Image (cartoon, rainbow, N blue to C red):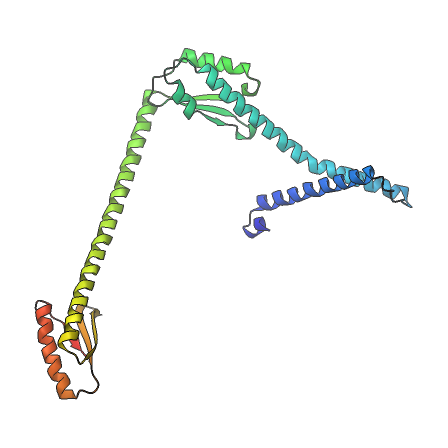
Length: 275
């Protein structure tokens, strides 16, 4: 079901195949248990029909087991290839100055048995001589699982220089990416600092306004963006709400007083006072 949901036919067929194998083993196990317990067999009225059913079951069982046998053989061959490959590298590369390094970076690619290869990366180290390479190719013939294996040794001054250049390029790219990340984080930190500063200023002004103007019920400061489609303006807006018991004249006087006080607090920065 999962394979069909993600439209992966290989998953779906693999799951169906596994289900078929489980079913066959359940049938075989049931048959053996019934034979062991000596349950009586069903008497077929038609002997030909019984033979056909037995043939069908036998043929289906054999057909289902063939892929499993092939998979088992491939796994065994791959395991043998890996074991003998590691044994080959461990024994035949001994004596080289960079033996431990070569042993650690060697890769074993079975490639489903189609074109197996052993890749030895000798970049940046002393070049392995052609005579020694010939010896290695002859030695691998002593290993049954390595006779058809292609031995690849990556080395040489040209390849080494290319490899080193690629490493430097990669490091430069990583360094540039990290620098960009640091710059972004610095901007975010600066923005947080400014936000914290504005928050502290707002708390200070609002607390003082509450003490100076007891009739002030709401106090809000925000920036308003506007445009006439030719230019964009950004205005600082202070919105206040006075006690509803005050009349219009009293509110106007308080607005004038509050505006003068805010001009001093904002260092004469222009703002809009709204009620």
